[in-house]
Amino acid sequence: MRIATEGLSVRLGGVPVLHDVTATAAPGAVTALIGPNGSGKSTLMRALAGLLPHAGRISFDGGPRPADRVIGYMPQDIAVRPVLTVLEVVLLGRIGRIGYRVGEADMAAVASALEAVGMADRAGRLFGTLSGGQRQLVQLAQVLAREPAVILLDEPTSALDLRHALELLDLVRDETRRRGLTTIVTIHDLNAALRYADHAVVLRQGRIFATGAPASVIDAGMIAAVYGVEARLTAAADGLTTVAALRALPRGADALRGAP
Ligand SMILES: Nc1ncnc2c1ncn2[C@@H]1O[C@H](COP(=O)(O)OP(=O)(O)OP(=O)(O)O)[C@@H](O)[C@H]1O
Image (cartoon, rainbow, N blue to C red; front, side, top):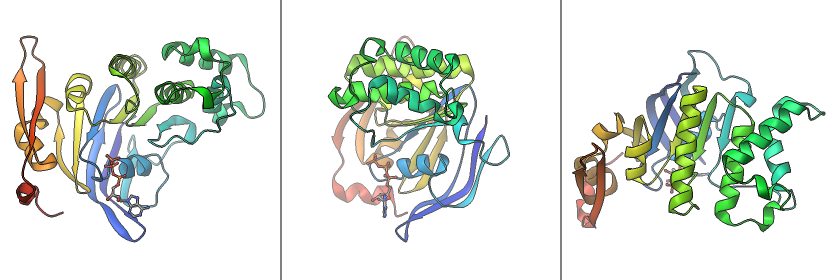
């Protein structure tokens, strides 16, 4: 399902937060949404998830928003009742499909999602007793159990250690390819964006700064202009580029970043 925004603008509490955002995300591809704190990434995700009033257009395969169950949204701030078990939390992902009766297909989807994120052996644990990273994995399982066509993941690796973060991104990329999902993921780690994303959308102060292939939009000029950081990019023999952040540019260099 191709997602497109055209001239998307959002105000929060009367304050303009997103300005004239025009971007696309294709099926079967991971789109990385990147930009500094406060640049509008979560706001854009919430607008895509149908949770915010907005001006401009958001289209899904050229048409209106599909049924809620088609979109799996994992917010940055997790609000789950801690007294639910892991199994119950993941089953909630099926809520748009099950009506009042849980069927075999529902339980199979829940089991396969729990196995995919490596949490099947903790299915009976109370959610509130899990670590922050384990909660994040269960939240992803809830999104996968929904069997959506679109997944929107807002900083899904923020609580994960190095290995779990890589495993989650591997899983997300594999599921995206295998099921032809349209996946949008906000991510702060530019190296992960270079490695895992097929497409990148860079936000700065609520506006699109650049869109395109990650290797073409993530460069020293973008990192200086958007993040105010001097960086060195190194091309490795395997063709992957690695970003090393060297130093924060003096605040005065913020002028480089320009006004919104
Ligand atoms: N309810 C609100 N009322 C007014 N302004 C808001 C509200 N929620 C968010 N904002 C502002 O909107 C801007 C964008 O916030 P958003 O959370 O989308 O940024 P972000 O890029 O996701 O940041 P981060 O990387 O820190 O998660 C920020 O300046 C924030 O202060």
